[in-house]
Length: 106
Image (cartoon, rainbow, N blue to C red; front, side, top):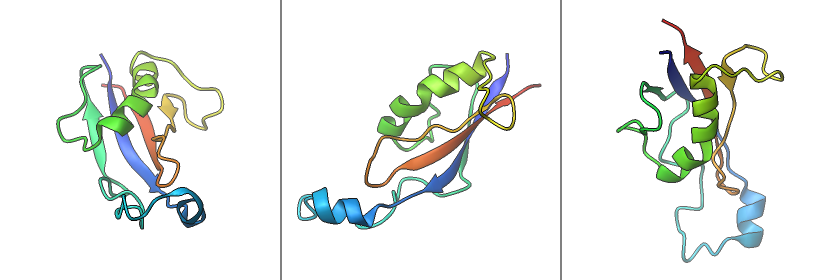
């Protein structure tokens, strides 16, 4: 069975949305990009649906696991430049993290 590599492609931060909609007193961490991930950080999935032990965010895992399963089980997305890849992101509207999901054929 193939494996899947998940790589943190980009961490974004939408200051304008935070300024308009976030209660910064209740969430002081809302002043920068997500600090649970670093760009370039990667994780390997060998047995779905098990989240890698070192994947630091359950919320992000829930958001991307559909794409991880799809790539792991052989699907290809026609809009991706390379077959066997996907580009999901977590659903944090203030501090989204984009992930590159790649099938690793062995």
